[in-house]
Image (cartoon, rainbow, N blue to C red):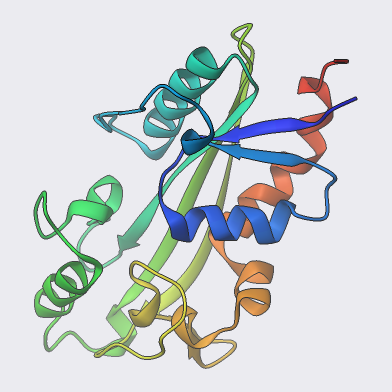
Length: 201
């Protein structure tokens, strides 16, 4: 039995996290770049699940392989859940991680730490070419710092503090982050489901 899964993402940060977490599962991970046809997915869903489903389905249909795709983002309490599904492009279509962080910190300027609560959310969809699919969700609660800290990770990691550890995601090494992150928690729920999607080849 060959266990092959295509990851429906081109985000290198996400790819590394999937590799680190699923690397011991005797699974061959494939990526969009492993296939001749180019992929382009417009993330126009209203929820993390809708976006993950769209990416996973398109990936499975084009590759004829079981696919996994996620959509994740940051929800800040003070901002009533923003940036949410717009996390990656919060500062505009051409946004960078730095621009997104700067916009977020500006919007939280003078907001006390006790009101800077937030959570990272990750929805993951497993999609089979036969149309079968399932989804799971993971989250991690934290606090938004007043300035970036650390140089690991990607996205909003430098401003997302885990109170129990006293560190931001960007101050954690990959092994530490992959024990507690929203994506790690979602993937842990995916693992028991995967065997249903593997076929004899």
